[in-house]
Image (tube, rainbow, N blue to C red; front, top):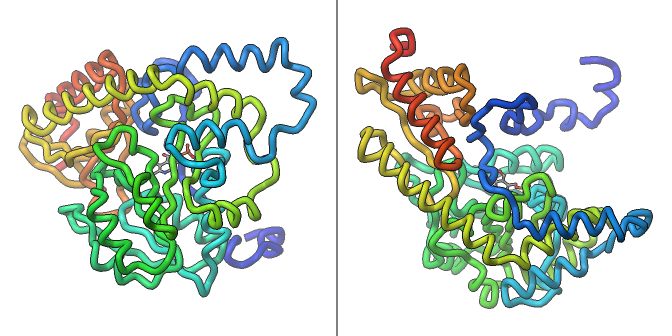
Length: 371
Ligand SMILES: Cc1ncc(COP(=O)(O)O)c(C=O)c1O
């Protein structure tokens, strides 16, 4: 450790940064590793951005709306809520960070399940906060009683979960809320691909926060917009810790345009769900690979090699073979429940065919079977 690191706060000096999925810069990759949309955003986004950098370009010299006012109004309208129920962030990661900043310290524990979104422990680490981890078993059923009796100040529930894709019902979330006294944050990054979402529960549960993103189902990962839906008192607290201009002018314009084109949004979500269900069947039934019933825009499947074996080394072998053939998926080797699996973002039909053909080639490759 250099002298400069020793100047940092001790908990920062020992922090491990979040590891994002690879973002290759050269072309030719089939990129199925970070759950982006394989389809472009609404054409209205490009029109709005052209306006903002064309005839309205002079306004770029001005700071953006500090509250993202027009965007808050659009989000509120979309969900049948008031702008006071909405806080907009620079991606939903920004919102998750605000929640940790406002509700977690060494005394105030932040809870989450394992596996789930691996950013949560990093954010808690930045805050030097304390964590409570509730582990799933292989069934991936929600450990409801443990969440209900958790003493965490704030609990992050990812639904549908990442990286499994398993969704939790409002009945389950309501049961957890019946006795949980902290703030329950339902991270709904993938909810547009799910059967149910928790927005309707907000009216009855002031200690519930729903977090959404435009990165996945609105095809705007590059624009970085996410939001929280919650009781106005919670929103007020998030606004106090938020950077004043946390969402730039172009992102606000793009996000409003995307939200206003619900027909485009619905069409890409429907197409992704159809492709997803086709490939869940292809992995699960046709290949006989154990595959969780996903409600997200990705598939979590346990590859079997030509000898019918599965496990971390088999998943790694499939990952490496795909990588060598420029097909990028995600492998999470650090946890026993995730190590035998691959997480595959749903791509276009053409991309999914390349994936399937490359996996067929892996099954036939003489050197691809490590066991
Ligand atoms: C569960 C979950 N929450 C939040 C995010 C962050 O999304 P955003 O792009 O809005 O920061 C992701 C991104 O992969 C995610 O998987």
